[in-house]
Length: 161
Image 1: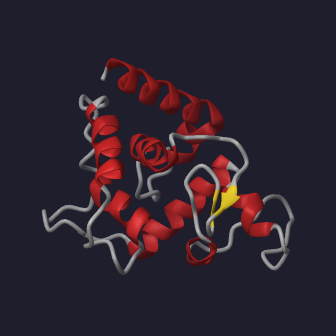
Image 2: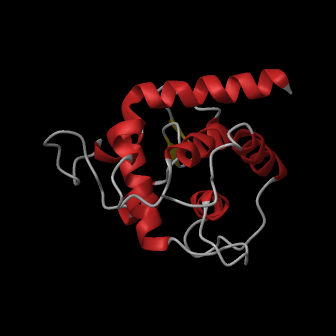
């Protein structure tokens, strides 16, 4: 358990080093930096190796449809129609995080019926989609998310501001 907590803290620290702290400071971003870090940890262990496989890419395991719904963001002056635009964006932590923020702005909702829109809802939306977030999350994903969030329990993860 201590090793998992240390791993989560190190992964979160790495994300902050990549610029998430500056990214999330804006008030119009619905997902906190802690929440983004824990979604990353739960979905991929925050593996930053450039990855595409099984219909998903990047450390957040984003699909093409998710990227499209998140605004088809690109790096530099790359056209969204470029063959590599999707993979290039979602393999870049900053571009992927902005895609998630846009997606959550569009699909954010109370998925678990607790009358709050928080990280638990964003994690369900991220994994199950904007229209399926009330479905069942895998035990592994839910456990990884909860363990990560618990390691930051002194921070209020229930609110986005």
